[in-house]
Length: 303
Image (cartoon, rainbow, N blue to C red):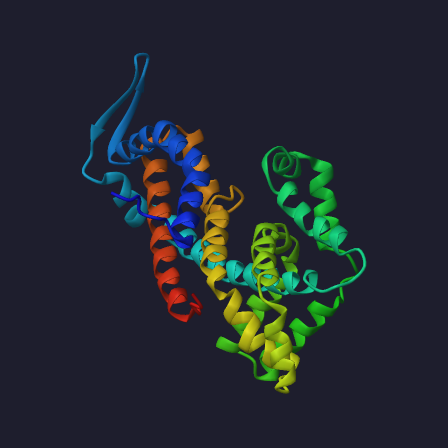
């Protein structure tokens, strides 16, 4: 029998599986056992003795304590999910427009791309620990965020637009508050947007220039070209960037939920901390599933 030929999509899928194979092997051999061990702790009463850990099933008592007894977990969970959503949206929008700028022809374009990709290096591994634990780096970050006098442009606009006397109260006032909160946290947004910028930039470079030339000959403006060509052609990359952004925010150790989980670990409440971690994980997976399903409905499939 003749061997069946693999098409272009099949080769791409094969190359993709080969690239992620090291992660799959590492996950199976290094992460599966601790994952189920953590789930077992979440469903048990953990007792520490000289002989080690002893687990005794407690009928979801740790989860009941997290959601029904603990006074802070529910509020922290809702606040964390809300911050995750609007910070992720801000990161995606920021990354897309920076990628648009870096895709233009100008002198020093390679150097500018390198500067924006430095955010990936600075937000990973050892350098992230230096940023969080080094007093000098912390003071430098605070100085950057607090640059200027008290009457900065954002603060003046915030007082004008959010003030109850101007009529922007209620939902509108809260919307403006979130917008200015994102502006004030632009440092964190920029630090979390390096990978997304690279992904969007690769998508922009795959768009054929002939499409823009044809649109220009038909009389399309730059705005119409972006809405009719750029955004639809880059939209298949949006689910990838969105999932990466959510997972990246979920793994940050500086949010209040992770801080509470780490504090419970330090108090040796392993079952309770595992229950909170699993609850946070399940809620984030549900959020990723629902939002990815919604995004997939608006993505333009041009294959």
